[in-house]
Structure formats: C-alpha cells, structure tokens
Image (tube, rainbow, N blue to C red; front, top):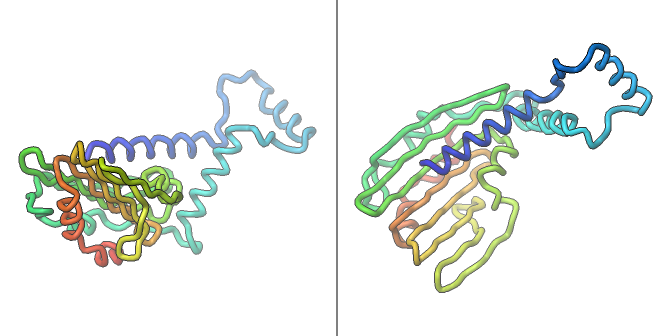
Length: 219
C-alpha cells in the first residue's frame, strides 16, 4: 500500500521534527546568547507568540495530552490482531500481500495492518490503522473527517457519509474505475479501502468482507 506507507512516513517525520525541536538549543550561538535571550524574554514579558519553536512546543504538549487520555497513556492495538481482521478474500479477489507493524517515537505510537488483493488489472488495498486517539495523526490521513462533502456527476461521486454508525468517506471515478472508502471508528481507528480496475459495486462488496464490529471493538 504505497500511498498509505508514504503518508505514514511523512506523518512520523513531522512528529519527530515537532517533538525534537521543542526546547532545542542552538550549538552555534555565541557564548552568552542564551543569557541574553533569557534577559530579553524577562524584559519583554515572555517569548513572542510568533516564535515557531513555542508553537511546536504547544503542539507537542497537545499530542501528549491526547495520548494520555484520562491520565493513563493509551496503548495501540497489537498489529497482529489488526492483521487477523483482514480476510483472505475480498470481492472475489485473493490476498496477495499481508503485513503489519507497530512503530513508536518519543511517546507516539501507531499500529498498522495492510493487505493487497488482486487478479489481473483488478486490485484492492486495505489498511487498518490505530493511532490510539491522537487527533493530529488521524487528521493527517483523514482530512475529510472535519468536512461535509457531497458531489456527484456522470463520472462518479465524492461524499462524506456514515457506515455502520461511523463517520466515513466514499469516492469513485467511473472513467478510471478507481474508488476509495475510509471509515473512522471510535476516534482512534482508521479503516481504508482503495481499489483500481474495479466497479463501484465491487468496492462495496469488498467493504462487506470486513467485520466492522470486530474492528471497532478490537483491543
């Protein structure tokens, strides 16, 4: 699943940058620069609101709050459990690739299971991703979750909706025979299906192969 892997890598890099930059010191600064900065801060009543490092520090604090929840750090689901929820077949297509991983850095963790199904020109890529409730991470892969979209034409459609009581996004291009379905479950798990060379009905059939109740309740 190339697109999701690339996005996950970019998300991880962004989190590393924002977290590691907070409170960092400039080793090339001349002697006494830190003292001068502290004095200027005291005289000016604190750091400027436009300071980018201060903004990143606030973002990191927000991530930490989201991860800690009610005071206890949320733990992501074992990716092996997520893998077991991806079936051997989808819409009549056999699974050709199946994997998963759990990655973490500076307190942030995510667990991912992925599978590819295909035959000839038909291909479906599926992923289940657990962010343990970190909204910044969720927003990076599901920007549609804060929008209301409803577009339709002879070429296809694009819309936000609900599937199984969960907020979802559907998109299909009839000319290219490409489609996508994404579902956010319990504000922490993202389920995605992306298909190429398939019909709209085949994409829906693929979705029906997933046990959404089991995915939503996995722990």
